[in-house]
Image 1: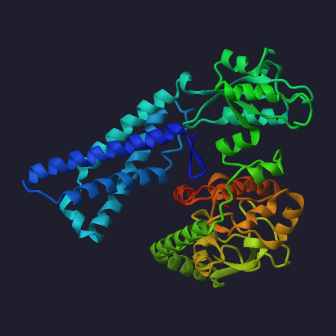
Image 2 (image 1 turned 180 degrees about the horizontal axis):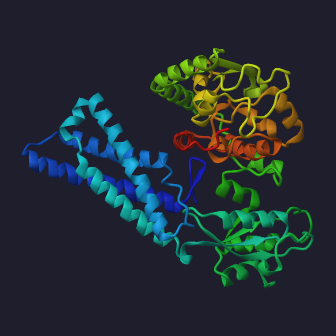
Length: 466
């Protein structure tokens, strides 16, 4: 993993991104040279360069919104090729539409506008690079080999996480090392034979990392000296909490120690970060609100036409530092959805949802009026979703560290919304909290942009709606 502005990115995904940007720039350059030779006249070099850069960036952005940087290596070769082709075609079409709009807005680029040749050449280059990387990453040599120190419940969770990784970053757990005092939860076949030291054991199995998954570290069984030998010998040593944070974008609360939050860094709430985030909030909300204005007008007309009820729905939510505010949404349920006054989680196929409301929720259109909450300063565009005070009181008493999510402004979208399904229970709230804690700890403009791109993908594919 590579850490970019506190967020972890798979190395191979980063290499793929750089490779594709260079290939797209080369495709744009060749297309520009071919066009200039045919036209027999010179265009301004600056317009050619900017046109090529915009072509590469917009194509990469379009591929990102269609999930092309979230590979699944479980697919066989034929299916992987089919999935790549099915996504690269609409990605190129989207990039072509965006670039055409920029040509209209920036007349200086028209002299070097790229034709279909650039997109065909760029698409072919992307397809070849992905096939090469796909076959390379699938090889056993590219898998990171690791040893888990411990054989209890936490060790089992670490092994399950490592095995479930099917993207660009793959792991091979060579085994677990038993430690006295741990209640064994892993299979006996997964245990490694006792060796002279952890370092020699790691070298014998060609393991480059040791994941420490011990629940109790106060006893004498904790091998401090052996772990230090591993670090000095070139073998990485990582805590289980840091392993989950790095590989799952979660801060697990079931095994979390307060010291990890205190001394683990992050939690940037400086004036610079607050200023950059506010500018991003206003820019993103303004641009998306303006682009979605026709959709919002159509949604309002459909709501009125269905049952004649109110278009908007206001509900009290908990914001930063526990302050209450009214969140604004398109009404997607019947007017008497909570006629008895008792708050309830939204359920799968909830009968309170109207026919129009079903599509508003599925396409996330019901959230669009919250742009007004962003302009008021009550919310951010990206952040933990605001919850109702009734549920906050219950969860704050039952779930450790729940109120940490209220240290920043809530958001219209967030990491939990793009990584997890719609929350409808206390267990779902706990799982989403682990993503929220990761965002609160590691939030940055870079992470906000990634979440925004993933949000577009979620809207297009209708993931997680209820």
